[in-house]
Amino acid sequence: MSSGRSRHVPVLDADSVPQDHPEFAFDAEHLGIRDDLDGLIAVGGQFSTPWLQAAYRRGVFPWFIQDGKPFWFCPPVRCVLQPRQLYINRTLRKFLRHHRYRIWINRDRAGTVRNCAQHRHDDSGTWISPPYIELYPKQPNFISFEVYNENDQMAGGLYGLVTGGIFCGESQFSIESNTSKLAMTALCSWCIEHSVSFIDCQLPNEYLESMGAQQMTRAEYLGRIQKIYSVIPQPEHIFATSEYFLSREFSGRQDDNPRS
Image (cartoon, rainbow, N blue to C red; front, side, top):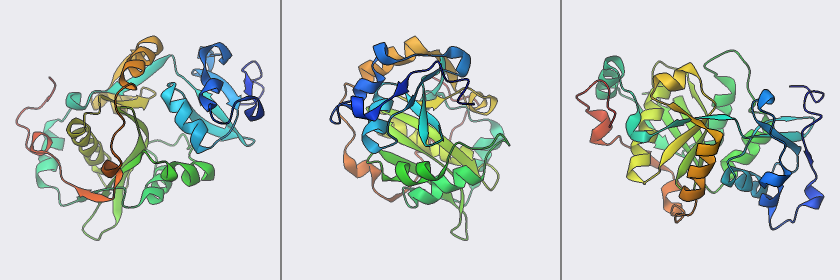
């Protein structure tokens, strides 16, 4: 997206936003939502922890950085996955029963982000530039699900931020077959255990929808997060480095389409 196409979108001036209230930058009256540009709302501001956290609480996320400026988005259609709606077909179910991978949480945060930047499901490029690799793993609510093979090498995984009962997914990758699906299954299992309401996958695509994700309008999404973000934040210990084991609900399903 060129800067010319975004010239009619508000440019955020970090100096004009109170340092202790960066969320003011994302209040509705200051936004210029362009649905013809995938929901681009503003350009500029700071790519920092306070701004990042404030953005997610407002249903906004930075898609990429251009000329040193973050581009902030709130898409007209959101892709979301209810953890219990994860679709597990026969092939995946068999894989889950017999795989020899180990799953870890936050064992190598930066490595997971780097792998997501290097190993994409498509060839459309990546928005995960060095500033992303530097900033995201430092977030207090960052969580990565990492899949390791028998040689103790990371073979797949995903990462995101847990904000007020929502997992805000950022990216995933797979080097070996089904490892990103294993990471997604682990995420759904973990979300149920920790009362995470739903997974925000950001933008719809065929892969996510094949896993059970559904589309939600912006208005519905923003309405839901306002209610969910009022819950008590997750305790810090859930972000500690630990090995993770799938719950029996996900590792030994009997039906092909585990939706309820």
